[in-house]
Length: 286
Image (cartoon, rainbow, N blue to C red):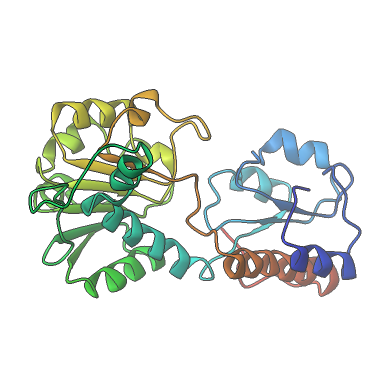
């Protein structure tokens, strides 16, 4: 098992015998970097009863394979909503106000002096914010952005996305990764956006075609992008690293200590429900 916060480690140790290998396990705590497919489940063995995924998204888990083997899958909803929404809004502000670009400028020790025309950015106030994926995190992102004067509107996976993209100043992605949402934001979607618009992705990396995004940023098709997740994570498309109108963070949407502990405790609760209490946890997926 990968390292977890000490509070979670202690809670697991109280009721279970942790093991670094899934082989022979009755319950597994899986990270989003672990591909829990049929082969993985078979390697664990027929005694496996529950997989507690340490994430709200379960695109790393083959739910059908788990169901076929009678394995319950649980996730960690709700507890990371606020933290991820905060980061999404933070990325919007960092990009619009050129905060990261300014930090790099100062650290290079470039010469500068106060000027009314120096490093002008834009405000989130009165910006049309398109939230793609109006689930818990998307709704919370909209609520927080309204405090800065943004005007949110929503699009789901079944919405006519092109028209919504054309109306947006800021596009924030909050859809799960599914076959339908892979490369949801491709060259055509980027071309539908305004040249002054920015894109923020705190969902899953493959929702965005990163090569198409680099081309769009270089061509001025859109004004900027802020990403916390990547198509081939942890690898980042080389072109993104070269652009000043891009803000990049290393998948830290849920990265507050309180949030990560709460996520871990939901995993512990799921293991206890199945293995000690003989019931399905409330956060069962599928």
